[in-house]
Each structure stands twice: as structure tokens, then as C-alpha cells.
Length: 321
Image (spheres, one colour):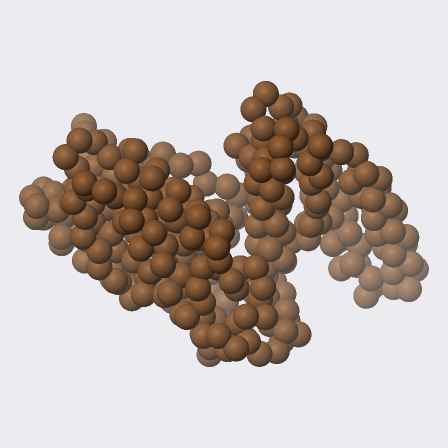
């Protein structure tokens, strides 16, 4: 059997539509390019990949045919000097189809809200796909991989350059996770390695990467903080923020019941907003603008993903000292 030592799933680098959703109104989703930061992230991923390779190991890369994933792959292989690798495009690894151009911002906001209420896995975006549809084509791709594993010449390291949702769906299929578990998973970060390692005793793959979920009691912010900093204060603030916004969400849902309840909900919402305002007056301690930018980038990612999941989070600012 030619099962690889490692299977690495890698989300593409930051794209222009990740920074500006209006891009999707004029540029086909499959033609959206990386940003300058996305190119930098992809090159760093290439260096990271080379570092984890054992002497003499070769690499097989399957990439989604979307422009942002192909550009990510190009930057990765540019860092693989003296490494034997092959690259193939695999359309089944493409992003979830969002229904062609997203011309109406209000309509898309309605769709995201409806999807959050209906459930992400089964909700089919108009003229597009549901996550269940993505699961079906992922299942076909997995069968292809299993057949290829029968060859003793299969590469020692398999890298799948793909998208956030496809990464979660691939893991769901591979590890037979339930729909409920899929629903609580958060997206991986840009160019974040999700590593599956083959166990010599069983031949099965151990998921080495801890997946983030919406049920986490505290965000995984430790890797974004400057060395030696105390992250407990930030974790506590993030937890308070989440709880406060849950109160706002509950208050909003109750507005339609009675006029008196609506008034109480509005008052509660304003009180929470005042607390948030006071909360964000406190400074975060960072040692450089680079660390501040990294923490801000993570907060922006969480805010963007939370909005699409029907969860309210504030878009915080971090000021470098």
C-alpha cells in the first residue's frame, strides 16, 4: 500500500473577495485572485511544508482549479527547491457554489441569515450548492484517493490546496463526523495546515490539528500574541463579548412578541452596547505592530465568519504601543 505519511489540507491565502465582498458582484468566484498578503501567506506555507518533509520525501499536490488556490499552489512550489513534487488540478476540490454573481448585497444578507436559521449543511444556496452537495463530490474524490493508495509509488506527502468549507467537509467524510459536528466547526485560517498523520501500527490517520468550534470556551488566540504576553485577559474579554452578543441576539428575537418585551429588549441591548464600549476602551498590550496586525487579522476572520454563521461578534481594533 502506498498510503502517504502525511495528508495536509490547506486553505488558500487571503483573496480579494475575502477583504471586499463586493468583488463577488463583478468577478466570477473562480477568478478571484489573491491579495498581496495572500501571496505572502502562500510563500510562508511553502517554506513550512519544506521544513516538515523528511529527507527524500516527494510531494503530490491536488489543487482546486480556482484562481486563488492555483496562485497559492504556485507560491508553495516556488519554495520547494530540491524537492520532487507533482501538481494536478482537481475540480472536485473547488469552493461551494454560491450561485454565480452575488449582485444584490441585501439579498445575500438575507440568504446568509436564512442559512444560519435553516442549517449550513443542508441549506442549498439559490442557483448554487449546499454543503451536502459538496459532501457528495468530496466522497467521489476520496474514492479516487483510496484507489490511488494501492500504488506503492504514491507520494509520501499529499497536499490538498482547497477552500475553507471543503476542508471541513473532507474531514467530515474521512472521519465520519455527524452533521451536528460539522455545524459547530469554524473555518480554518488562510494557509493554515490541517495535518493528518498515518499511524504505523494501524495505518489510520490521526488528525493532528485541533479544529476550532463555535462551542470553544475560549478562542485560540495564544499563537497570535507576542511572546511572554498574558493572554488570559484577552480570553476573558472575548468570552464576555460572546456572552453579551448572545444577550443581544436573544433580545432581538423577542422583540416581535409584545411591545413591552420589545422595549425591554431594546434597553438591554443598549446596556450591553455600553458595556462593550467600555470594554474596548481598555488597551491590549502588544510588543510590535506586526503582532498587532496578526491579532487584528484573526479578529477580522472571526468577525467575517461569524456574520455568515448568524453569530454576532464585534470587529475589534488593536492599537500597537
